[in-house]
Image (tube, rainbow, N blue to C red):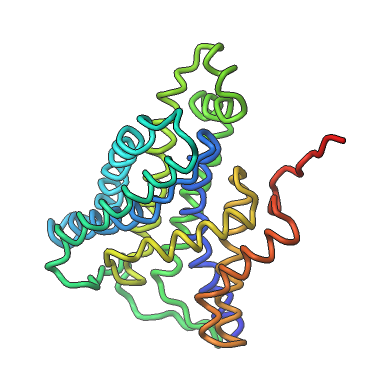
Length: 291
């Protein structure tokens, strides 16, 4: 039982990590938590369903098209919900993001709702489960884990080895100094929202064959990704990855050994404990108090 729970936890944790990275990417550059991120994930899943199931395109092609479409939707989100309120109080940005999330959810119900509330998505590998000793593996789980790790690796390389990634980090450190250095900060903000939405769409395409696609799928996932980001330290990409895997393992082990009800509440418990014990998370900077 333990090996299965660990593998399942790593699989779901990789998806939480990928979605948490999308949250952190936006937060690093703008210090804003994108509360519409869950709905961007949901729309990415429906777009992949449209390309793969309705239009009969290949799985990889559907993944690429869904990510590109979500990237464009992220640009729209930044332009509609964030840029007009750049100088507004933080609560205005939060309310705008929440309002835009309801717009996306309503649009999804209007466009895809007639197909049923829960839409199945065919797996990439339609082969029987693999049995290794007492461990039963679904091939799609391996696809999800590998795909999530590849996406994480690409983002890590982007932020550490490319000029655009370093510009984003410079903007995150000090937007005023970055602007004085000639960096187009507005373009960096737009790119971060687009990149965050793209990571959500990639996670949705990977996750869809293991679950159903439905308009409310984004809300609970946002909570899990937020818990992962808090656990790892908001603003830290390695922290988001570690936090995502940790949340996946915690909820699967708690659901398997304590009670299934703990699967859903474990993320909230993690947030409560982390905020009390170490508010900055694993990799978050310690606060400096002036005396």
